[in-house]
Image: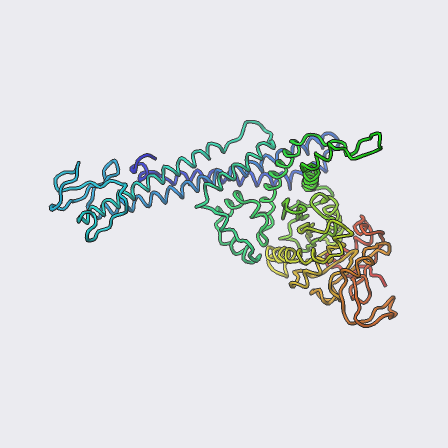
Length: 595
């Protein structure tokens, strides 16, 4: 926009109308992705077999990915157009105010932006002015205001120079804005074809960064709550217009996806964008390293570590490979929607920080009658997410079978950096206390999104060190749960079930006789209380005793276990997993207790 006349006459609502159009395309693409993932996947599993099933699943995955990409890119175009319109409207308003001021003073604004004003008869005539008039051009050293000694004694000159400068600034701002957004909008395009490649997803990340940089005045990261409570997060979200919500989700998916308290469907959509883009980048970085060399080689001295593998690993090969394995586990769960009536998955959290984190729900917890949140223990991380996700899938199936007419959501919460070394890290309570605030915030956010403490029956399930995390969370804050189930607990840092905040009758413990962890962990992570130790009801110790959940003196319901070892509690169709499911759906009458 090179002239003030063009800025004045510009119909900027056309940009906003165009933005609305792109927004509709973005929203329809996201809705189509949801239909593909949640409605079209199930029939494929039930009606197709063999190669036909494999091909159909491959096509559905590609279609879903395409819609996800369309949702993001079209959303970026919408946000860029809205931000462009907002900045130009601001410049247009400033121009119009300057023009109005000139009109009120009976000044004339010339085509070149100079301002003609009535000149004092006591002063020499300015060059280029008509008789009795002066001409003010932009570029005065300071904005002259009327007053003694200013503008060479002519108050009109100061006013005219101020107006001329404001006109110039408005036009210059509009030109800079127009040029900046023109470049961005030209780059928001995709190559022809049906395949969304990793290069396209990485390019989308660059596009997102460019739009963020350009739209900082219009839509900034600083407006998103940071460190606020889930209730405050929800209040902020509810206070936005629908268009603002969509723009924040498009431009800051990682921040919105991590926001406890807002709807799970929103977090899922945002986190899927982050997952797709992150997976593309990790795969690219891994490919750059070349194929993984053999870890060991045979030499005259015997089997030794391969120097080539060591070099590959030092450049991040193992880390990247592990991250990719974890992301593939998440995508594999997406693909299982509809198998054995398994509900859609909701990705409530994902990042590569620390050991890598993922929070994945079977079914929408916002609308579930029953909700279970599983906190895994030592060695849990993104790389090993498959096993933890599978456990909660099995709990969902058992709970679903027990609760006809009710909906259930089971959540895998790898939301903290768990101890990774059984010997050196697991005995330390610091990991649990560090994780406790994050778990509490997530549970509060879950309750907020559901609509309050009575909206869903909520159970916390902990395994191994995950039970210690739950214990630390209850010591720090009233836990937003109705029941607590612990399996293979080495100790919960509290001495009695009544200390966990849900009532002694709502604490449930499983411990296999062959599980060594409860016995090993007691001295490090057990809690203390004044009481009496008993074995089958027979007292054998009294005083200030140390307890863990499998002890009779702890006071929890001790459930029957028909599995062995430390990791068998989620064996399909076992009494161990059925007991957990019974608690999850509130069918306490179906729990088999150890008498």
